[in-house]
Amino acid sequence: MRTLTAFSEKDRAYHVDQAHQEFLRQQRSIQQELEKERAAKEAERQAKEEALQAKEAERLDKEAERQAKEAALAEVARLQALLNQSRDA
Image (cartoon, rainbow, N blue to C red; front, side, top):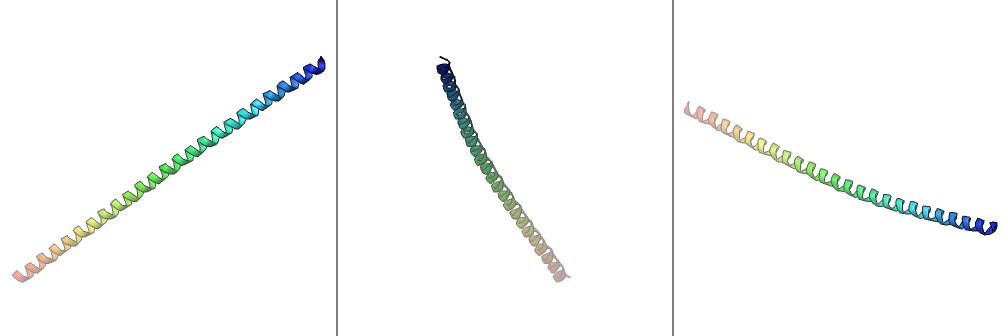
């Protein structure tokens, strides 16, 4: 009887251990999936941030170009005014 009880307890311990190992495998799989999703979301966030920075840099370039054009037009107007003054004099 003792032998049967010992085998039965070993069998139960084996099944408990197998169930525990399966649980750990499932938990690792879930954790890996969560990490993949987090990495994908982080990459997406970073790509959006880079696109936003590129858009801002483009806006700043256009603004600088606009200011340069305005400065050039102002200089042309100033030079025309000087030319007109020298003609009138």
